[in-house]
Amino acid sequence: MGSEGPKAITIHVTGFKKFLGVSENPTEKIANNLKAYVEKRGLPSGLSLGSCTVLETAGEGAKSQLYEVLESSVVVVSGDKNINRTVIWLHLGVNSGATKFAIERQAVNEAHFRCPDQLGWQPQRIPIVVEDGSITKAKETSCSTESILKLLKNKGFDVVESDDAGRFVCNYVYYHSLRFAEQKGHKSLFVHVPLFSKINEDTQMQFVVSLLEAIATTC
Image (cartoon, rainbow, N blue to C red):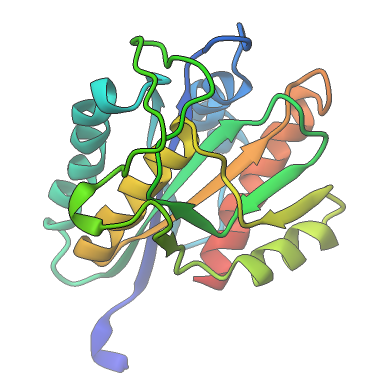
């Protein structure tokens, strides 16, 4: 254990742009403002905030952008020779019908979009990754969702665990990210947030920073 060097955790965050029915996506604002918010508030020793990226709310047409973002973390990590660095991807998406935060335990290999994505794609019951087989195949996060949930509840946040990230772009991105994380030895977690009209912006910013800390504590 002693030869591993100091433990360092980098968490990269993504949000999404607007999409049909959601003209202002809270996760876009969170991702754009998180660096400045964290600089003021600070993070525990050993934990650093990596990239904060806003993704197009699209599946197949935005896949290359997603992988470009994911691959960027691999290049950064390769420069750290003496540090036991853990890389975690935190993806934030909005559930416009929700009143609570939801920690998603898994993603399913199915794209079934209730409406077209922002690039006009609307798949119906097709596998996200054909070589992975059936649309019923699921990938689970290696993050301890139960421990993260407990820490956040102890801080007073209204948060639940979920086994269903939907079948829209959130699930699509999460499935690809979990797959990528498996291959690279990273971790990935998806969390759904409500609209700002349900939980205000300041509370959501506080939640995301507490979420970063909870992830770092439990991974």
